[in-house]
Amino acid sequence: LSVGVPKEVYPGERRVAVTPANVVVLLKKGYSKVLVERGAGAEADFLDEAYTKAGATLVDGPQSIWSQADIVLKVRGPALEEVEHIKEGQTIISLLQPAQNKELVQKIADRKATSFAMDMIPRISRAQVFDALSSMANIAGYKAVLEASNVFGRFLTGQVTAAGKIPPCKVLIIGAGVAGLSAIATARRMGAIVRGFDTRPAAKEQVQSLGAEFIEVEIEEDGSGAGGYAKEMSKEFIEAEMKLFKEQAREVDIIITTALIPGKPAPKLIKMDMLDVMKPGSVVVDLAAEAGGNCEATKKGEMTTYNDVKIIGYTDLPSRLPTQSSTLYSNNITKFLLSMAPKEKEFGIDLSDEVVRGAIVTQKGDILPPAPRPPPP
Ligand code: NAD
Image 1: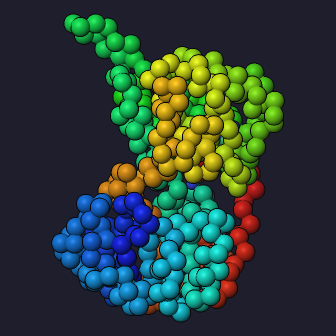
Image 2: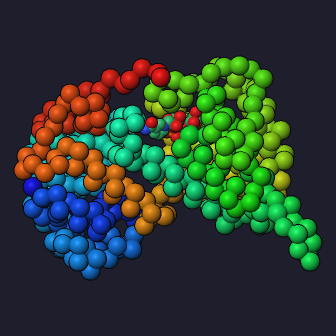
Image 3: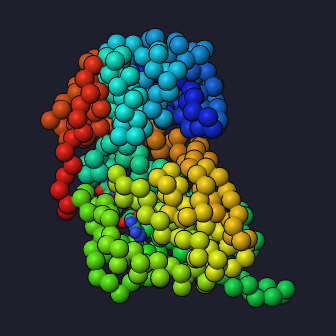
């Protein structure tokens, strides 16, 4: 079997699906060829020479990949211009987001190709090694703090210097999932005072173990939903939460929001009146920008300023740390592929495997309905 790695075509995308280190792994496991498009890793600092040294076959242009490879590994789902090149029976693994890309899924099925969505891999213990959403969320949380600190006018840490005492900056992180916890850890390492909030009670201990304070509302309502994800909260809870955030907004310098509910638009938690009470020079980073944003003023993909508060709505944070995100994504996707085809010449698609069934979107010409999700833990 041959594997193909085209250069990503999505504007601004700097990641590459497979790094040279994983080319070595695939060849060692018996894949006949790893075809890599010239320049595919350049923006992530994986240069063509490194791929050649790893044993990859470099090719010019995407056509040679799509026409030759049995399995194509990508970061983003295929673009329309790529779909044209898909050949019958080909397998494509990428962050496909099938629910948001129904037309694309239909087109892939029309080409009679098999496709897997890395973002649909069930989040069970066994599948953690394939969990690209967690890998990317970890990076997004880290980078969110760096982006905030880049436009924030002071240190994050406190210092006592000859020129005066500097108080530490205060950071509030809303949503303590994978990205939120990563942001908490990063802001703590940079010396900030950090507070965290989440609707799931399980988050409390995790926030505290990172040296941050867990802030709470008086209402008792468990926000844990199916599969460890959050559920939508009652109106009363959201109101209490927003009251708490308004008090916090007066005090903190940086707010990073990460609140998401699967399949729903992101809850709007930071309203204009909260931005009104923030100090001049404060920063909000909205990691939910892609899903509509947690902050009312967020502009998707951009940084805007309101009342001298900067609001960052970048949706490409993993791609802004391209070497790291490519390394982790490449490990995730390579291990996922090897779990289905460890050595064999034939791909073994075992639909009774919960992980395979969860991630598969099309099989030859058929669109498979989404796999049932596990009940709440
Ligand atoms: P996510 O990105 O879907 O959501 C981010 C956070 O926002 C969640 O913690 C959620 O509780 C929170 N949130 C939702 N509504 C909110 C509101 N109104 N106010 C404040 N916060 C709100 O979540 P995620 O990072 O993908 O992780 C969700 C859960 O899944 C976590 O418990 C995580 O530990 C778990 N997880 C398990 C595995 C695994 O077992 N393989 C892998 C990854 C994540």
